[in-house]
Amino acid sequence: MIDETIIGIDHGFGNIKTRNCCFSNGITRVSDSPITYDNILEFEGKCYQTGGDRNKVQDSKVSNENYRLITFAAVAKELKARNVKPGNVILAVGLPIGRYAAEKKEFINYLSRDKYVRFRFEKLMYNITIQKVLVYPQCYAAVVSRLPEMTGLTYIVDVGSWTIDILKIINRTPDESGCSSEPAGVITCIKKIQEVCYEKLNSKLDEHLIQEYLIHGHINVDKEYIDIIDDELRKYTSRVFRTLVESGINVKISPIIFVGGGAALMNKYAGIEQRNISYIEDICANAKGYETLAELYMANRKR
Image (cartoon, rainbow, N blue to C red):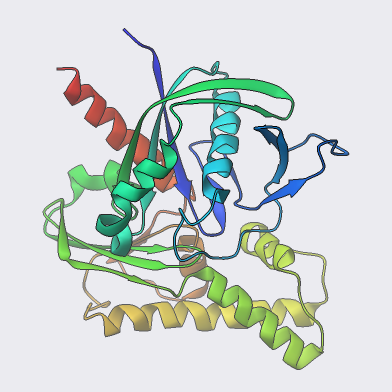
């Protein structure tokens, strides 16, 4: 029997998430003799810095090599976190609800282009065999552990970096007629914060500082910047609720679960306390869900 390691990877438009890791999706070609090898990927004779400034949002994740290369870094980081030796790997990944059907096959082909992959990450050699690539819908994966307790109607709202994905679930089963994706994720709020800082303070606030504030709740800047960030986050979370209302969802009574990187923002800034609304604030929830779904798939195959 072949030993296989299932690695769930959430290829976000802002961050890459695995079960144990989260880092920026940035990847940049650098000198073949870098100053430091921290987060350096070496592949086919070239060196890449991973985890820096995020990549610009692409129309398709397969339009260039960026997501494929960053996948290798994610695999290396996750294997190290688990203290597992490189070997046979099953990639469990996902796509936004609105693009899942159209892009699933292409994403599988993209990530499985080479079955045998050899690379270095932070000077350690990795020889991996990609046994299979399994693709699942975002949103659904994030709540897979909660499915047994779901009855009747539930809306899952994944507030991601670039999209807000809405999934309607009826009696634990996704209702494809109730799925949608809107390009109104947290990145749009970050850009608005930068615009307002420039308009009011004649100064641009770096995206890294804004991201740090979103994650940790504090940064070493003047209070006037913090006030702008907080104000724009309140406006943004209100816009998210308006998006749900415009989608035909009764936000006062319909069970709604917010997931994704923006779930914590919704909980903190929306100012809404209703028993029909809950939050999964684990930013790695989708990646963990991909693994769970892949484990079920592989277990059924072996029966």
